[in-house]
Image (cartoon, rainbow, N blue to C red; front, side):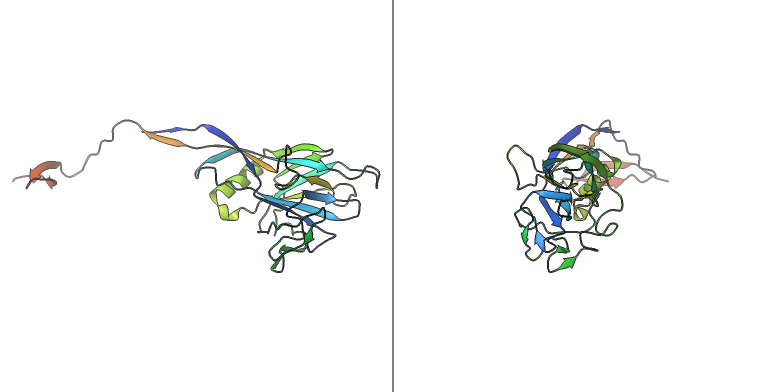
Length: 253
């Protein structure tokens, strides 16, 4: 008889790659600075990318809860264009690979080959379906989770059926793990942009993007005796020539 036991485990995973796409500098990379998403007060859109590794979770685990945590480090200047506008930010599962890069400063620096930019997911190599990423091609048609972001502070996305499905897919099929894109749902609104901590900045007591996963692992145990009946005869063990072998008892007629 097979007895299955399952105990819940929760792990917090920091991002292993993150960057942003910045419309006003379409060939710049922002892989080593804070993440930015939304529309700033200079009419430029941005979108953030981040990816987590689930390699520390056992193969065969069943994921039951998922939450994404981001820390907003900066909002637009209150004295410009009506000030910061609270708005919804959505996580979309990525369908395409991208290069983190090491560009810095608030608006990035010149990209190197393979880096993600507004125009290309791999600079001098592979373009997005459309600059900034094409919905349905580069990232999912619908968001996995959405939350409203206002002032500086911590924000959480999840747990939703879609987020759980994303994480389970990445665990079961690691080669399909391209992470999330963070898209502001009010990209047409000035002052909707926000900056979030990345794995490089700002650091200290402010955490990088976190994926909090709760999962269970079935633990099979064997109980009882296994009885095997061999139909058509009885196997007997006998000693022959100093060795142990098996033979079939023949019926005499």
